[in-house]
Image (cartoon, rainbow, N blue to C red; front, top):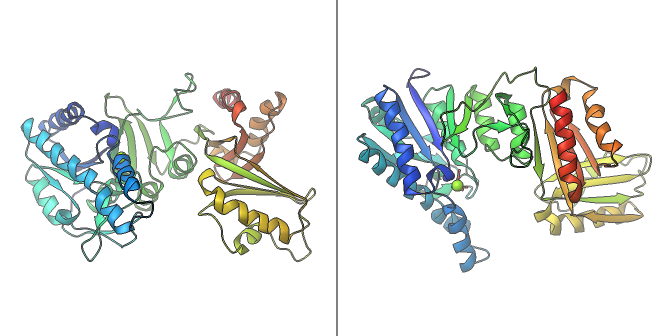
Length: 405
Ligand code: ASP
Ligand code: MG
């Protein structure tokens, strides 16, 4: 279709598109590049909080709206964005055209709310337009079932559209413009000493995306990984270089970043006697008649018989009865629920390659009396649950340890 580098796929998120002024700024930035000889395909999200507002509107109509109707509504946010963006590009003197699910043939399956893109059936038309010097403006987040109903890909799903489009246009780079100028070692609003991380590998970014930093959609990272596409996360307001997510990362930095998630709960089931044929805790949870969408983590101490399971606070009403049932089935002594927790995830390739790292990170915390309720170490990620009132202190200490590595 195109040689790598022949077109630039650039995604602009809701904050970059929040007002007419910002949209005109995006248009000027694009105009500069087009005048420098570049071909541009834009993927845009809904303006500002539009998607939230649309979903809230539906919430006032019904608590249980048909998923199809919810998607027909939610998809309109991006339709607004592409049309005004294309008009802004015209205003600054460019040739531009908007493409939405039907005009680009963005085919998906029919899982409303989390649809999967299967093809861009009319990509040839977009390619011809771009070859002729036009700027294509594509609606992110949406698609269309074989029957022609609009679908959405899941919250934050414009990232997925952008990476899938870069792939199908034969590109090895996708730029994501956002209100943060990259990925930092910690949230700079919480810790001013945080430094920018220039390179992350796909697994590191995936762990960060899932455990709280929310900068990229995990499915976009998965697509990029499958096709070896690099994603450059950079600011829509400055010219600075941002962070690049790619296959190689930067092994010199053992820990890349700390993410915090305040919406986690933990249940502790004490005194679980492990029957000789009892299997592993993972199978106990899998065997329950119902489970929340995700048991985020679990630890089991075979000596004290203490099982800890973490899940998102929103899943409490499913998780608690399931764990009560488990506790009853295993003659457990006590079930305790804690929701005033924050979960800190420390992410970096060194956590996999350097056995000394985990104790080195935990020691300073223990020294000041912070004993994490949960320690979950999987591959490049170490997750700790700490009481919410100790999170700032814990974060600061962990971050200082990380900067000293
Ligand atoms: N507008 C959609 C959302 O807010 C998609 C996106 O932002 O990527 O979830
Ligand atoms: Mg949005």
